[in-house]
Length: 132
Image (cartoon, rainbow, N blue to C red; front, side):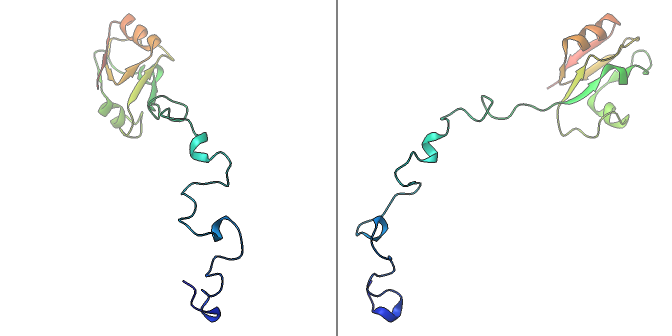
């Protein structure tokens, strides 16, 4: 460049005094960290952070004790749980957990069941159906 001292690009042409960035040539590459190990090389390769394949699925939990007062033969679906006010919305999949007892046979449809919940529903004469 070198256009004279008054232009801001005179004498040293905006490169300051000596040093690596004042020399001729292309300059330093993107991500260069002064010769130390660059951050990009110190990150784990192809592994994600903490979980294989990314984030874990976050389920909305519903315990069996909240289903205890339902009449015999009721069909419990995700939509029913929202209408009954047991869950807020259907933004996450639903998992039925085993806290409490179900005294009457119910047909419960959810995305996932714990072993204890499935055992308790089937012991009462009901069915646990996994939906996708």
